[in-house]
Image (cartoon, rainbow, N blue to C red; front, side, top):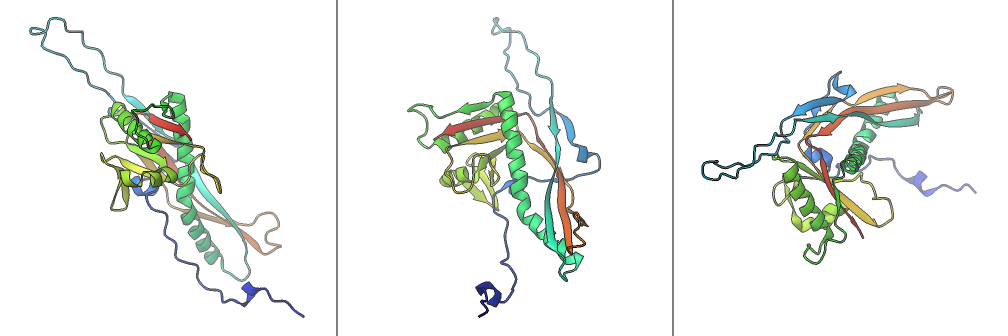
Length: 270
């Protein structure tokens, strides 16, 4: 007797139409078009990170301290990186154009998560190097009882010390869900009650499949400088791919991403 597996009895139809998850990095960041020079990364000199001081009329207040020099401008960098997906399939009577379209669709679905994971790692490295992450685990009785609200308040307040410009706050989607009543949703974007843009990242350190996090973090930066290119498609064969009737297709896009004035952060251990 021949046994036919159940899936073989079903009609092959189109997959569900997917919608990229909302409130991620792509909802908050405007990307410039990357050019040939930007593909090596970008740098700039910023005047948006200085802190002003106050003086008084020396005739009315004799004990006036001398003016102090402001810091030099901030030098920002936006290193380049490339996100890709390698699609290896049997040609099996399907045109190369169809395989390329499939690879592009797979890439566009997966792209945001990969970009977020990379940038979240860069934020953590920069914040650790700057010594700007504050552990709020033992803040005391006067702190907000919600650890995520405490982290948010810490990062928001530190951003105002970092720059007088509007910054960006980055958090896990776990954290954004925990702060559901403390974040504002408007036009597909998230912000704090003070109006600072919020990115709820799916690619985030410490968030892994089938486990509860044992801690979390939140970061803030000054204004973002970012660029990206078009999705590029390359096809060929791997090893004896032609002999096996296989095709290999790479879909990729190059990014450059950086921020002004530095990084602040807060972390919590549960």
